[in-house]
Length: 146
Image 1 (spheres, one colour):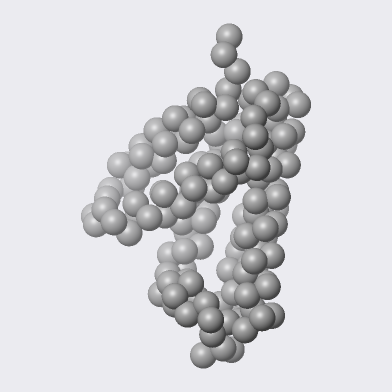
Image 2: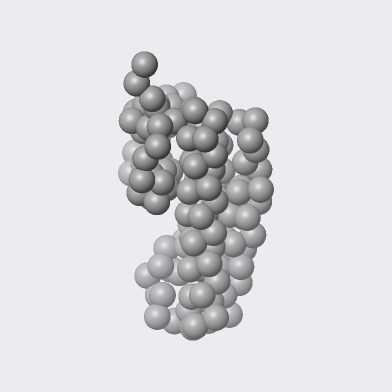
């Protein structure tokens, strides 16, 4: 079980790294969030049962595997934090508590993953509309008032 969970963490880490590497400075804030939502949802869908087991059986992961999982999440938050700071420097968003904004960003992405599981039969158009509305609502709170 430990070996399966460790391999699952390594696969998850690889997927997350590829997603983060796909973020470019040319992408708008909304484009980055939509990209992250879609790609992280796809990552979860690849082996959702294993991801559920990893979080449920975290005590079986072992120190090395838990550390890898923690590093994956820490890298994600750090990347999002830096991305948001750059966007503030460019004037796309206002100065905010970037650590909390990164958590808000990731919570927004996570909620789209949860909705995928909770709303059976959600059509792709409905799903895309939900993601777009949620992202616009989130990023509007970070944008400068004119």
